[in-house]
Length: 130
Figure (cartoon, rainbow, N blue to C red):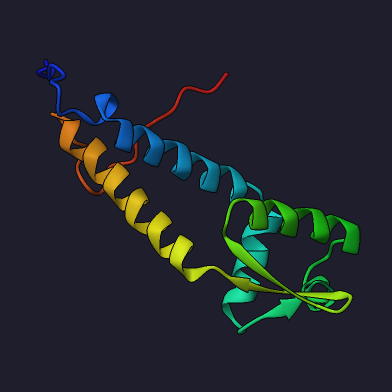
């Protein structure tokens, strides 16, 4: 039987800063929650910047679809758009990506610290299927 920890005033769940951090992290996870957007991030990581047409050339998607995904990534702060005439050049916002990485790691570390009976490293939990 695992022991249950009682929350105290310093707990993450009660901290306004942590809640805001969780909301920000959730917004980033939502933006990254589509395979096409992950592919766009991976593509942009291989180059300094790219316009929409260059990104489209690397993906099996229509230009309009790529534009929609770029907009989601931009709204989440993961991309910076540099408008040059009629073209937008996109580049990764590495500051936001680094912050997302740190917040994600802190989140997972916090969860691990709350787990009284962690699974052995080589064990995969079994999930119920319906």
